Length: 416
Image (cartoon, rainbow, N blue to C red; front, side, top):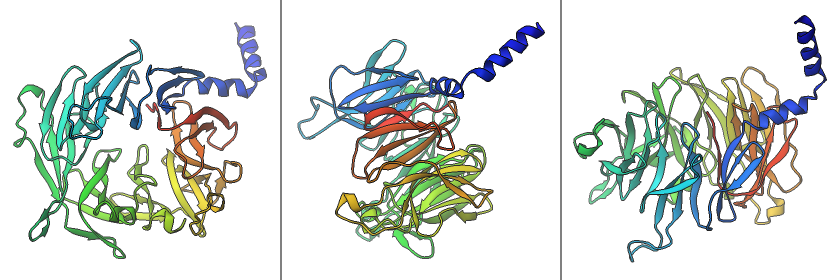
């Protein structure tokens, strides 16, 4: 027996580390859009799962058990002649390899975190589907998010113009009853908080029109979200906010813009990361700082060194982040003169930050995402204005980097 254990240990020491790295690659599971088709890649096996090309909205989304995909695509034949385009909501089962349409005119579809149910909106109506039929849940919903237990929603209604000015956006908690057949569409919602008509961070002020991108803290006691002004102004200035789950404490943390990255919580501590700073990118690659705020202490640290600007980030653990970072620069209409980002490893408890990727000139590394099951960092390598790029993977320190998916548009990894 001792000889057997000795031989096994010797074998493990002799096997190259790259073999174990390849084993980790098999833990990667992604769905993506390429050339108008849906694809799934698990480990090193890639399969096209759509038979006809289509125009897809957003990236496909994984169910909580990793057995289903949720996606939205443009309908070939809109049911209403008044609609130029119409979005259909579909699901795909990896085991049966069958697609199923669950709704003909909806969007903003999201899986329940607890079971295989899908919530979505259509014409301001919040609906829930059990993948066989759908049920109306609430009216006048602008955006929403499931509670972690899958039994309620936090939802927002947008401000609307009145003769005396704009109203305020309102946040609601909407419980989801066991009996979906008999839901009271107007009596089921609990008002959580009315957002002031104007909010600011002391330096900038915006009108409060919409509340979007809700995320719960790891302990469920806090909710982060973004307050937007009107559509055109939201390109330049939005506000990242937090509210306690009971609605009693509301705070504006900082100014930010859409289209870079959304606020994200650390895996198991109440640390909220976000990219602060107003001004759209065409005004220059500047004033975009990665910050982390601890709640409920409201202690904030800036992680971006001078002369740099951030484009995106991901948490690795409670003390480690990876950022997509560029040199500060003015905007140029010449794509060759625009800075492109590289990835940087950041430790909250250390001052030193380390660059970990080295793309070729005039191409950048965007959308970093840590996949815990494989202990790998993933990202998309492309030019700023491109919608298509290549998925790369590497160890946390950037070593063993390799191309994993070529010519990909919208994509998502299954993250347990």
